Image (tube, rainbow, N blue to C red; front, side, top):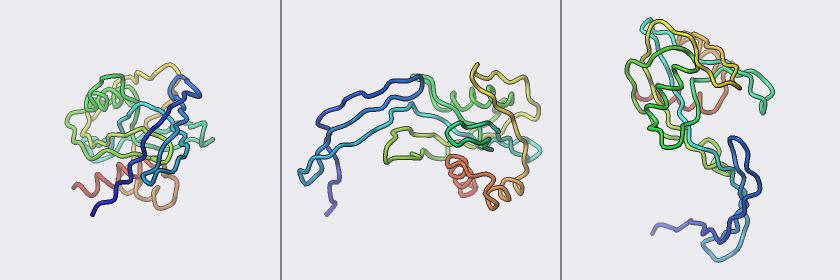
Length: 179
């Protein structure tokens, strides 16, 4: 018999509203009737793309992440606009962050990176992209640099711990398993 683990929300109080996140404090009831509190970060959904050029090289991005206090090498990624189709969001983010155009795209899976406190779901894709890039069209507050890597360089970076962003590791693994 399947055990019901659902936590019933009794009340929600918005504690913070910012540009890209909100924070809610929830009063919940556990399946056995006990009461508890949960803090939940509300953040829109996103896309992340493993992008490969016709020459077999992969286009990643490097950007400074203030929360991590360092520049990270990551797959192309970004938030979805309200109501935006994830495939269209993946195409848009690829062009904005790298200047490359998506020529074909395949859905891999959807992940939740931090389900203990954040509702964000990230739709992972593998995309074949154009062989040449146009000018980037970054958001005004972005500072993103494309990085071209071979498959061996990506995997070496993962092994050495220089590529360690969770969505990047998830996207790379899902792409490898889908081949």
